[in-house]
Structure formats: structure tokens, C-alpha cells
Figure 1 (tube, rainbow, N blue to C red):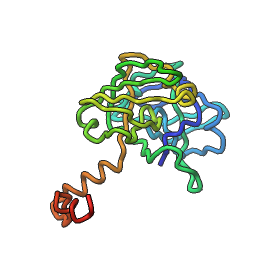
Figure 2: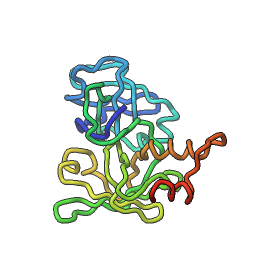
Figure 3: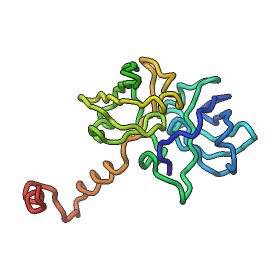
Length: 208
């Protein structure tokens, strides 16, 4: 489990549909073979580690359905180790299981902040709400606005400077993970043996 608070921006040394080799400094500390590290929001398992890099297996499926296939040697990537039991939730619950790929509409400065526009696939956009949480390339962000399948995110200067979001350009593809709580709610309410219903009567009974 991750929180979407990026610890370090690493650099791709090699990436393919079989493995990824990432240059890093911080996240290699106290990391063991078998540990999980989110690379641009994709949970990968460490198979080899050195003082300044780690290697992780990448399955053909993961390579095909995420924006990892957009990376090349020299690309910057957001890195986050799995959250320890005593850690703090600085962002939101991020599983590292990418739901889909979004396309960058634009990145523009706005009074010291930065507006990031992302076009989502309709199957992911249905779970996104204004002021809700979303992970873009592993970064926990808050949705400022949504129109159709397009989301607008106001990125604070610290996050912009300290993640690979600063390198995004119009037309780039990014990994998208929606809030897992929204998917659980949908599953619960759509289950055939679910005895509870959220309808107008339910809302009135509960003071809405």
C-alpha cells in the first residue's frame, strides 16, 4: 500500500516488457529483495538492488496496459516505497494497481501554482469527483474540477518541483489510479444480495 507522497524522483536506466532498472538514492536505503516500490504509480517488486539502483520485473501485461511503455533511458520517474505500518497517510490510499492511462491536455502556470489537465478514459472518469483524490503517475492529487472525461488538477509548487510532473508536456500519457473507495462502494451497491439501498427514502430517513 502507498499514499501517493513521492519520496524521490529516479531515472530510468533500462526498461522493457521484462524488467525495469531504476537509478535512485533514497528508496534503495533499507530496501530488500521482494519489497514493493511504486514506479510512476505502478507497484513493482524489487528483484535486485545496489547502492544507487534497483531492478524490478515487469510483466508483458503491466508493460502493455500502463504508461511504462512510454519510458526510455533517462526518463524521470516518481518513486515511493510501500508505507510502513507506523507510517502516516500523507496522501490517500494508493494500491499501485493502475486503472488506466490518461493523456495530458496541458500544463500551465497559475499564480505560482500549476494547472494540470488530464483526459481520462470514460471507465475511469466515472469514479472521479470534484475535490476527490486521484493518483497521476503515482502522485496523490486533488481534483479541482471535472468536465466530462477531462479533469483539472491544481498542483502546488512543492509537488510540481519535487516530482516528475514538472516534465509533463501536452500529449504525454500518464498512469491513472482512481480512488479505490469509489470502486468498493460501486461493487457493494451493485451486488445482487445487497440488502441496503441508497434511494430517496434512505436519504430522507438519514436527514438528507
